[in-house]
Amino acid sequence: MIVKMKHLDLVCMAADRESTLESLRRLGAVHLDLSSAQGAEVAKAKGDALDAETAVRAILKAKKETQGSADIGAVKGDVADILKLVSDREAALNLGEKIEREIKKYAPYGDFDPALARKLIEKGIDLKSVAELPEVLPTRRLSVMQAELDEVRRKVISIDFKLAGCDEKAIMARYPGLSDRIAFAAAKELLKESGPLAGISGWIPVTKTAALAEAARENAWGTLLRDPVEGETPPSLIEPPKMFRPMKVLFTGLGIAPAYTEADVSVPFMCYFSIFFAMLVGDGAYGAIFLAATLWGWRKYLKSGSANSVAKSWLVLLTVFSSATVLWGILSNTWFGAGLPCCRNWPTVEWLADPSYHNMMLLCFTIGVSHLMLARIWNGICKAPDSTCVAEFGWAGILLFMYFVTNSIVGIFAGIPKWAFTVFGVSLVAVFGFTLKPSELKTRGAELGMLLLNIMSALGDIISYVRLFAVGLASVKVAENFNSMATGLVSPANAWWMNALMCVAMVAILVVGHGLNLAMAALSILVHAVRLNTLEFSNHKGVSWAGYAFSPFRKTAKL
Figure 1 (cartoon, rainbow, N blue to C red):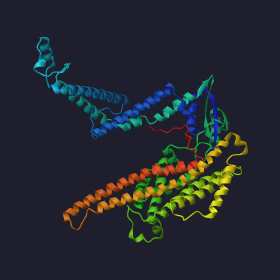
Figure 2: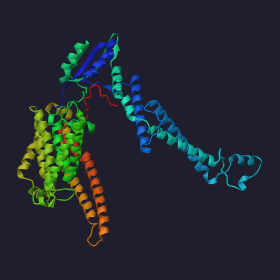
Figure 3: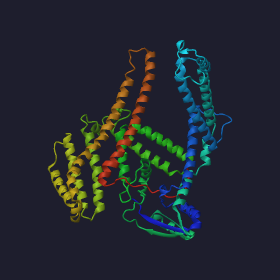
Figure 4: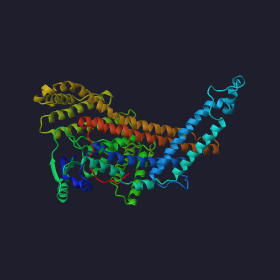
């Protein structure tokens, strides 16, 4: 569910501004619009954070370029000194580029002495008749330019070694609370003074109002809580059932959040995403690799004794998704693009291995229509007993009819059942008759004209789920081709030493090929699995993902 929010207006004594902010930060329950603060203190804190980040990046880059070598006399973590080195390095590089351009310009004329050439020209000697000279003489010899360039390059290398000797961890340890400092400066700017008082506004979940009341009594605050009014956009705080709570980190990773007035779709998102993940990867062996990596992550996590809820949530999600992929490999008997002989006669495998691919497409369309109908039925239940709920149930009937149409188009079904036409007719009446209320016909009546296009687009929405089959099949075929390419290298006709070399090449091809296929599978998940949830399903559910996540003012202690 999406937790209900209350708008908070808080008043304190102006002399207690900083202590008030410290108390609010410890409470960790109030969302403040910190992005609107642009004062000098905020700019200074952001500048310090940027300097620290620039210094750390410079050190890491230097360590990479020097293979971790270090200068004994290097700076040991002073950001200002490191930034001076970075500035000196940039200046040296610019000077080097300037000298290189001069060398390139005068190199065709050779290493002549421009001072001597000027003296001879001043005495009236026509040097151009005996030698080719540039229109504008250089300020120094070519050999001097080259020496200057070599010196600049040595300086750059010296700076790189000095930077490589710096300890980026010391910088990060010295500035652990820069993000907190930025947030505190922004909150201080928002806590505006008005005579002897100061006030600030924000949002707080209804579940935290009791804690706020306790803090208000302790700190002598004045607080006013009210419900959101029209035109206000509270932040969205998602609280799914415990089993599905890890989905919050996926939403954060994708940078999406439902609007405050929309629904929390974490449960269907996770259930269907697991199915999409398995079918798009399409190979049980790849799922086993994901699962092995996840189990290794669990081992490291448990061994470290960390209480990082974000890391734990990601591990839970990856365990579910990779396990689903292994299960799909068992059902389809697909392991590195091949099948296990002992499993080929399983009923499930035989059904999915239909040479016409009709069964796989039927499965995709069935998953699709169940996904979209769930959205519409959910809408209908939420809107009941309002009359518009009838239209939502009507849309579910239209989707069911389009499911039969889709299967008929591709030749899976011989035709559309007669009862489906009855369902379609009743559903059309429900949609046209109950989408709008009589009082809305004058202002929104034009929307009814778009319903025919929306009904046709429902057909496209169901067809789009065939991507689960197409992408998964492509992954399997790529794996099969790499397998054929590799195994074809070894032949009984070859000498033993030739087959030994071919075995090495075969292993290399299999590792590179399946590694590339695995990476492409991961990319397809980001593209297709996310799309089916955030576009097709969300359009029918009415989730626009136009909200912003609840982010309370609290201490994070991160760089």
